[in-house]
Length: 170
Figure 1: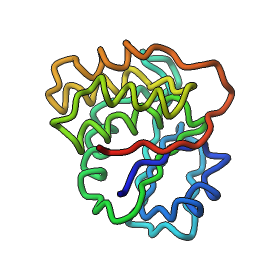
Figure 2 (figure 1 turned 60 degrees about the vertical axis):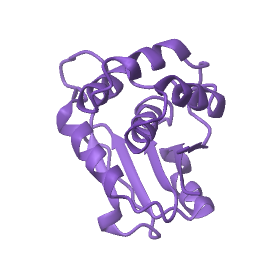
Figure 3 (figure 1 turned 90 degrees about the vertical axis):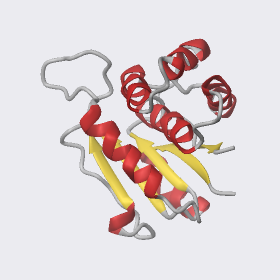
Figure 4 (figure 1 turned 60 degrees about the horizontal axis):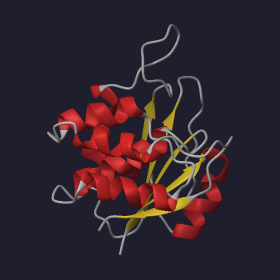
């Protein structure tokens, strides 16, 4: 069964190789050069430039609809024949939020709280970016349930970098 794989930038190549992923999402700040492993075709790689912030901040890019909407389109177009890797700089906030959003989008009947608990079980340090989750919650019509689910699992364990993990879609 295809699944979502989350990792930090430093573990991208090895994660793509180990999972034999077919699709890749890169979530990095403006000015960070995106990296695409050779195993990923250019048309199967989405790069979104945004800062890991939840409130506007001078010199930073606040995640918004202009990031989340194309992400949702990319995820929905994924054929699920092989895993999708989602990464950010540390593999803790933007990427975990995006994996949670993808799981909610691909399984609209699935309970948001159950997805959030599965995320926490897979990654003790996951701290999903609340702004990304809130924008997606609105776009997906989840009426605050995604926001509440992420709030319920709380902040993850302190870490400089996340450990790669998989998130099942069912």
